[in-house]
Image 1: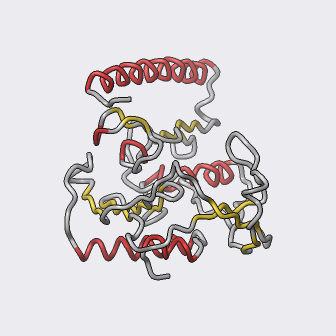
Image 2 (image 1 turned 90 degrees about the horizontal axis):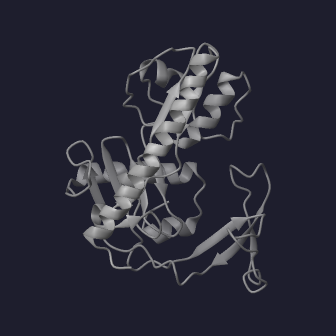
Image 3 (image 1 turned 45 degrees about the horizontal axis):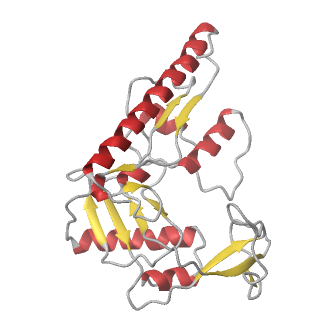
Length: 266
């Protein structure tokens, strides 16, 4: 499909219609909370899983491309009856992994020690940070690190082997089971920090539809350039973001081949 301005306009109109539908239906939820007096004892969380590119960076959609801010920086609205804060923004960095521990804490349920998310009660109440940086990206693609001000994108190193593996005990793709050919060369890996003492299958992954994410490392100042149109060159900030990326990859038990793929030292 040729990506033209006419096509982008068409998809923007479709997207605007979807937003209007979501807005109308969310309004029904809010009206019911008014009607039944639920604001005193009900936490409300409004969130989504990803954004969508509608012509920004000359791209459309979210699959097979870098996770620019339009995709990765998603809405999160929370009403917490304990704090009763409304109509205010928070500058602290939050992730979707924070939703589960926030709910567990609200209902008085112990938070499992291997959860990396953090409850957002103090962030909601007084904008107290729960992390200094966040790691995100896509399987076999670019890896990003953001600290709220700067965003750093790391591609695959040009001379690095692209060894990708599925780590799983559930041998299914999104729409199909693993084939016998895919399972011929598996071995066992782990246990990892998040597998509760269990080892998992490590299965080589090959896909002609997933080209390597090459290019140069890129740094953006999101305060001055929220649209990520003007990369900056600042070696000191870049080194700081690389250090944060390495620490977060270790926190997530990233396997050695991921460090090698990105040209990073473990």
